[in-house]
Amino acid sequence: MTDERIREIDCGIIEGTTEEERVARWGADWREQDLGMEEFRMVARRGLTFLEEQIAAHADKRILVVSHGAFIGLSLQHLFPEQFKKTHIDNTSLTILTNRNNGWSCALYNCTKHL
Image 1 (cartoon, rainbow, N blue to C red):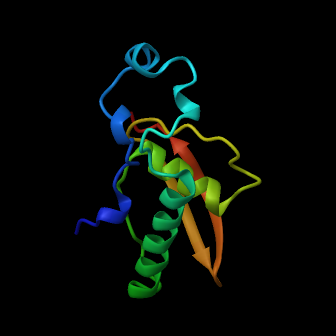
Image 2 (image 1 turned 90 degrees about the vertical axis):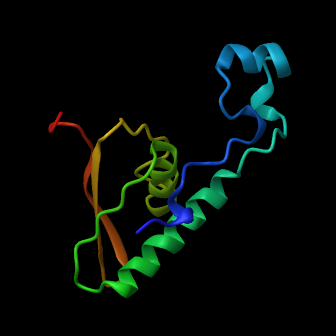
């Protein structure tokens, strides 16, 4: 199954550009400009909505979700604001979340031992 809600963050007009190209086009303060990038809180909100829907549809089952690093990191920051103020997700890493009694826990974060 595929679902648009777990797609990577929409980077607006900076999509596909390098840091060097961004600075040349929009200046060193390009991060402070409105360049059409999806708001981080909206990325996290769609992530949580997706997870909650999957939990309801597949109660007491294990669910595998495959997505992109920024999406996963922002969703984790939303679920665990004290634990994950900043996140870095390595390519092909594994993170295991558990939801019990409407509460979330993170048993494994950004594991790459399988590589």
